[in-house]
Amino acid sequence: MKDKQNLLRTLPKVDKIIDSLCQKEFFKDKPYQEVYDAVANSIDFFRKGILNESIKTFSIDDIENEIVHSLNKSLEFNFKRVINGTGTILHTNLGRALFSEGLVEHLKNSLIGYSNLEFDLNTGERGSRYSHIEDLIAKVTGAEAALVVNNNAAAVMLCLNEFSKNTDVIISRGELVEVGGSFRIPDIMELSGANLIEIGTTNRTHLEDYKKAITENTSMLLKVHTSNYHISGFTKSVNNKDIAELAKQNGIISMEDLGSGVLVDFSKYGLKKEPTILESLNSGMDLITFSGDKLLGGPQCGIIIGKKELIKRLKKNQFLRAFRVCKMTISALEFVFKEYVDENTAIKNNPTLNRILENIDIVLERAQILKALLNSSGIDCEIIPTKAIIGGGSMPDASIDSYGVIIKNIDASLIEKSFLKQPIPVVGRIQNNQFFIDLKTIHSDEYSIIVDSFKRIIECA
Image (tube, one colour):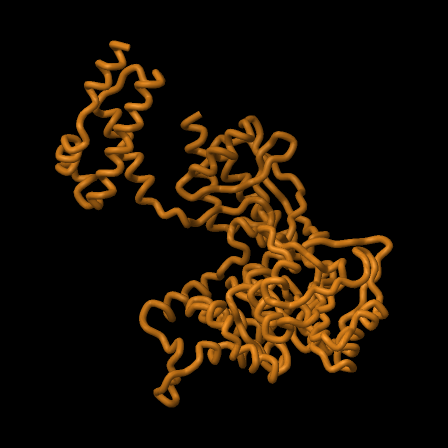
């Protein structure tokens, strides 16, 4: 106890340390409050260490080093770049769709000053933020009109609230999906004010089920694409064309929540067939909603396309104000859709499409380069075939051939934990107690970051 008290008495006072540190070059340009907090936290760290006997001795240099560490940590941005070595292209936890260098440059140029967000340059009067993108989206998708909100759940809720509040919406039980974070279609419908009418069973729903459920209080037939899971075997669902025709016959609205939303027919390139936006439109659906940051490869948003008179009504709904998108989303989305005017341009420049459709030999070449760089740094590794996935609640039963670099003779959990603490964190995978990086989601400018991270891990081991 006496030793503890002696150590506690030797801890310097906060103000005294600050006066001393502020004379040193490293601390001169740092915000005073940040320095004060770092000093206070560091003193508290040593005090607790003394009391629980994890610290038996220390020097002023030890305290200063802890202060520097604490200060650097507090000055870091929480939101930062991360290297994705998981092989999941649209990794929800890592930000989903990547922005291309061209898009980032465009955002810089369009956002660095004021903008014509809601200013009509032709009339010199107030304009609409949606005017920058609605005609372009309609042109690319083939729809009559378009509207953008802040995510697809908001898009669905806005449509249901406008067209189905206090009325019935018919949906198949097999399409009552849950998306990430426990957000469920039934809950969204309840919040919108619509009445949920379930038909069919989990695995089988017939057109006759829809017909029998329609009443005078029915306002909409809703179809939800199960983009984040797949049911196979003894199944039956009703196609869009039949649903759209039935809705038309009964004077009600047909709507499809496509979820991911894709403009490119992946089956042309040897991948699993995924319903496209164009196919949904051609089926006769009145309204279609989909996400911007999934297979489209753009910013987070919800896109609504369909009949002009319906979109016009949505623009007057009071929820639109709560769901509206910011200038960055509008600027980014315009750039992305301009590239989609030509499919080949989109595939070449859109990072999401490019990574999904790139040749396997290109991935192997990246793996060979990374392996060579790691080997030259004394890190034992080898190339293995892997299966990458699209992710983001898109095409759940589709995998893409890929290659990974697996690390040998270093504890996998040590690598995993150490990588997360790097200046630019690296997220990989563990397989058979070995850590590996899938090259499907690695860019060539990330090799040196990965190699340098490994070097630091080895030095500290």
